[in-house]
Amino acid sequence: MKRFFPARLAVLTAVILGLLFQAGRGGPGTAKTGPVAPAGQEATVPAGSGEQTAVVNEKYGYQLVVPAGWRVNTRDGREADSTAKLFLTNGDEYVEVRVGAGGKGGIVGYDSDSQVLRATKQPFTALGTDGILFRHVKTGAAGARTWAEYHFVTTKNDFTFDVSTAVAEDQETLPAYFQDILSGWQWRAPDTSLAALGTPGELVSINMLSETQGWALAKGKVLRTADGGEHWAAVTPPGLTSNPWDVKCAFYDADHAWLAVRNDDQQGRTVYHTTDGGRNWKEAIVHTKNNSLIYGSYLDFIDSNRGWLLLEPEHGMSSLPGELYRTSDGGEHWSEVASSGGFGPAGENGLPFSGPFSFRDDLSGWIGGRQGAAFAPDHSLYMTTDGGRTWRPQDLPLPSSLASGKLDVDTPPEFFPAGGQQGVLPVVFVPDSGKTSDYATIFYTTADSGRTWRERASLPATGPASFLTARNWWAWRKEPDAAGLAAPARGELYRTTDGGENWTVLEPAGDLARALEKGEKVRQLDFVTDKAGWLLLTTADGRGTELLRTTDGGSTWRLVPLDTAAARRECGLTE
Image 1 (cartoon, rainbow, N blue to C red):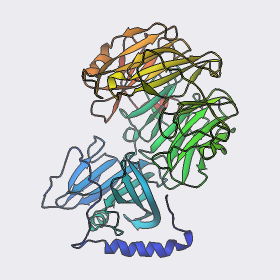
Image 2 (image 1 turned 180 degrees about the vertical axis):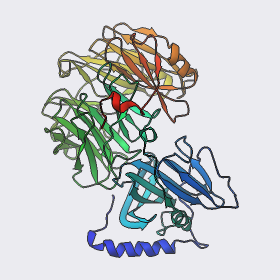
Image 3 (image 1 turned 135 degrees about the vertical axis):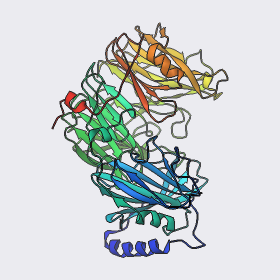
Image 4 (image 1 turned 90 degrees about the vertical axis):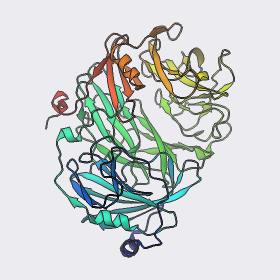
């Protein structure tokens, strides 16, 4: 549980922390860091160097002195003069500098492989500016190791700067090396050109609305296109960090969009919303009932006004609680609908668990989970018919062709047309054998508005899919290696025009074939007509993405060069 100091203790605590800062200047008993710092790339200062050196970051406007013997690395594949993730190491000691867009002042980015056990924050002064000093006690995913992290967070030139290090859990003083690096910091004038702030090659997801109009998420940025993805304009809400943790989005049309983002300085979720295509954004804060930490969230809108937000509050390893909130004014105000705390055997009192969900209309909705998990022992799909207040399980029959296993609903159903009676639900079959080669995707369909589902088709392996209508689908199948291990090799694109009764295999060709040969992996499909579609790939090194486009239904693909520098005019966003 995160803890915050009462306001009346702010001045006294700041003085105490200042004394601890000085006391932490080392000595023979200074503790080493708790976690092992991961290796960076492109070391620019060799370990054991006998002289201090300086790092000048022109893009974000700062300079710092690197102590003798420390290595300078970047963790986003960029040079040190333009990186948003600078990593300094000396043995098991490290200092990381992360830079986020906007001046809101929360911790920049999160490690999804760790969990915060306790947290405090307090006003603090360093780098010649006022900021916040965070102390987080964290544990790894397995819970076998704990440590403490210090984050000094401040804002400058409309950027958020997060300077952090880690120490042993029981060390409550800032280490000497951390103070030394902070004391050598100087501010400079940043490069604020759009080219410097753009994010080509770092798309996280896309959402195309037509052959020309669409949205995308990048690392800490919201982008919009008006020419089919050839150019992208940054329309990011002020205050969104450069690598926010667990961003969920909903894009209804070219004007209306919503983002649900966790900000560390708020015990809840910030929901940004725009009604003019990203020119202006408003925000609302949704708190959990107990003001606890938020582990995740899900978001869905059925029109420009009515939507739902599902929060996953802090919990133990064997539970997955959720709190469901609703808005009827486009995200201005939110009210609680249900929570999993009161869920009973008949589903009469609330949510069964937290997970991906969608609504077909004002009353009907579905939420999915993994069958056999501690929080959903019998069913992987639940339905509500009263706007989310109560939920009941639904049966998903397992095809006789598949061996024993469980079902995992990690994608909610889609209906055609929007709000219609026909729907498609892709479900992952998780084999008891655990072999990747035994995984499959089962496509369930409904013709009665989701009251019942029947198994329509199944394909081997797993991968992204795109549903244009109730009958026109595309599905990418990852191709596991011969040994049946987790590493996918290439893959194939399947297409059906009769709702899964028959499939056509489209062999990778052109730029798609070349990308797969380089080790790139398909992460998303998005079709808007029977001819026009996009495919998002992750590069082999995992540092970037490439966007491909088809105009013939997926037979051939062309690389779309990502350009943000000249996009504002294309999207009509000139000031």
